[in-house]
Image (cartoon, rainbow, N blue to C red; front, side):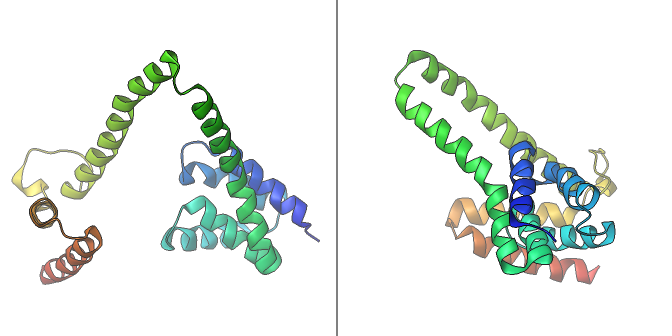
Length: 188
C-alpha cells in the first residue's frame, strides 16, 4: 500500500534533482516509479511518458500528475504534482529573497549583466538547433538544394514576415502554419 508521503517524497526528490528540464527528469522518475518502488511496469511507465509528452505543460509535472493518478487516484495526482513543484518553489522564493535583499550591490548587478548574454546565447542556440532540424531532414546542415525542406523554409519565412509586419497574435500564426503544413505536405 502506497502512502502519500512516499509519493510526495519521491517526486520531491525528482523535482529537486532534475536539473536540465523535463527530459532530464525521466531517468529519475523511472528510477523511483519503476525500479525503486515498483509502482508500475516499464510498459506502463512508457505509456505515461508518451501521454505526458502529448499533453500541454512541462513533461516532468505531467508525468508526476499521471503517475500520481495511476497510483493513488486524484489525491495521488495532487500529492505527486506538489512534490514535483515544491523544490522549485522553495528555490525560486529563496533566490527572489536574496535578490531583493542584495540587488543594489555592485557584484550582484555585475553578475546579472554577465548572465544576460549567456541567456541570449542559450536561447539562440536552441533556436538554431530547432531551425536546423526543421530545415534539414537529415538533422545536419548539408549544402545541397535537395537536402533542404523548402516547405518548412517557406512556412517559417511566411510566419516570420506575418509576425514582424502585421504583428498578429502568435497563436493564430502557429495555427495558420499548422494548417499550411498539413495542406502542403499532404500534396506531396
